[in-house]
Length: 106
Image (cartoon, rainbow, N blue to C red; front, side, top):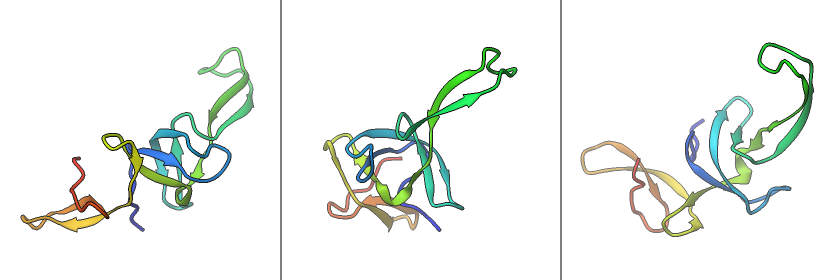
């Protein structure tokens, strides 16, 4: 299934404990309909010492959040917008804002 948001997009959380916060998408998990967003839905994990973290201890990292709780955030207008697909004059499929109809610059 395709999504209106993709890796690297700036999104705003519209539901849950982090409602109102914005962040950049790090990774999309399509099999679970979830995404990892930078500095959103932080959890603590107790880890053993290993090569990457020789000290071990408590590590904070992002947990996934359901895609339905995220919405594309337009920095220029400083608000959330709905995004859909459109075919441009050259026949290419592009992402566009639903209400304004303007094509999102990739």
